[in-house]
Length: 334
Image 1 (cartoon, one colour):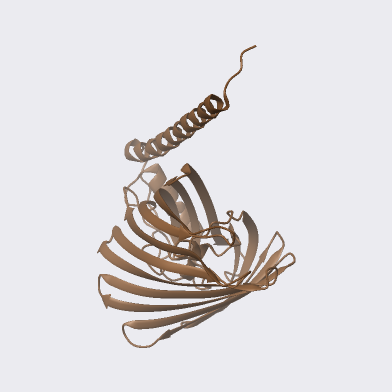
Image 2 (image 1 turned 135 degrees about the horizontal axis):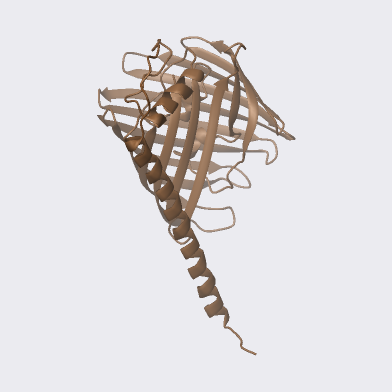
């Protein structure tokens, strides 16, 4: 009977897992490339279309371009442009934000852990023949709007289906209520105050109930326009949940740089902390993100190198480097 050493067995398992991950990435990239090539060589008979103010005009008579226009038309509603080229989630949750279908795919390499793949899908649209204040949402319950600036080491929250009612939608203030199937309920109020032509203050208050968990979150953002090509943002948050009877706090800065209508950069630095079971800094984060719109209005990619100094309550602080390639499909009407 032949025995295999534990080291040999571990090496074999790691080798097979690596091969499986590479094969999966290759198949996935091949699928995306085939879509892109298909848009370049596929065509259909041109038809006259009524391009109203609520209809997206395709750049060319390609099948996927027309699909993009069709989706935008069906989801169309009066709304505002997203806060920035980076589709800022904090403004995306505003009652004035329009319909969106967003699919992101992250290929990451993490120091000490290896390769990881993560896909995330979210959608929001109003029901036909129903008031446009009522929207169907399919998204995560967690504070995904804070994840980019304040990354966490916890498990990813699962998406859930829900209904959101935009109760108030004014120039400076908005209020909405969301019911989810988990079950859960969330109320969010936002107020925007322009201090002067270059300085804007935004305050957001949220309270929520998820099964037996009750919590609240307060966000305060200060935007300063340095020039037509640079925007500086100072973001702060404080959240409390009754399961741990403690607070989580965070502060961070972002510098946005406009390169062109299809390219932009963001430079980020942040730190987060908690007071349970004792006061300590949970993570310090620095990153650089390059984002570009390619080939079609709905196709984007991002490159993000980052470094995190994280700590759990019973461990020492450790540094971790990470590099991420994101491929994103974005349909939105704002």
